[in-house]
Image (tube, rainbow, N blue to C red; front, side, top):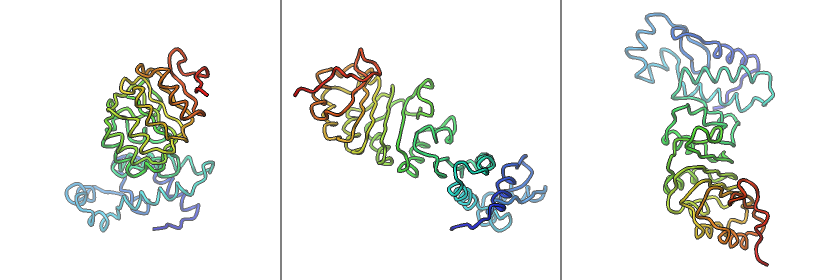
Length: 275
């Protein structure tokens, strides 16, 4: 459903929602107005109404799915530098506090691409189940994805996968077919991660697998057909040799390769394919 709202109406609704305070103020109606509460309405809600959607809609005009839809629509229509962005962000934060099961992820109103754009929205204790659910719904919008199980890793990286099995990686990449950049650091991997990556992400441009013992020279053959790959970083992958990278360089002469000791995170410019 498309909601037609004037800027004044948008401002009023956002300010009212953003300034909502206290548990006994009332409920967020489906149209983002606030229904004030009293002791009787709170009692009925607690005992009966909160368990039945028809009662919530009929007696309290509460439909959080509809409220969610209106907020997302407003967010999609607001330019990034719009003067209403501040009150919009405040309203979204309040809505997420009041209705955590209907929380609005930043991806839904256009701020998406990097993992850091949305992992904080999932909360500090998000699980694999949370990540899979999010990626199933929003993964097609992602262009960059970062994994690191350590809190000292990249800001916003996915930390709940200490080990990423081949089947889990396949499922993740199935949900994220438009990735241009995939970085995996210090995660224990399955038997054939490069096979999974090459079969799912034919348009990947930047791949980093850091500090992994699971990746070996023979696995690099899976990358031979990835002509869009521009940067490859294998820092800390001790079972990768210069000889293995030379063979890959013959197949992908324009590929920039980083990470083989002692080069660290610098490009290995001395690595040239045989002519």
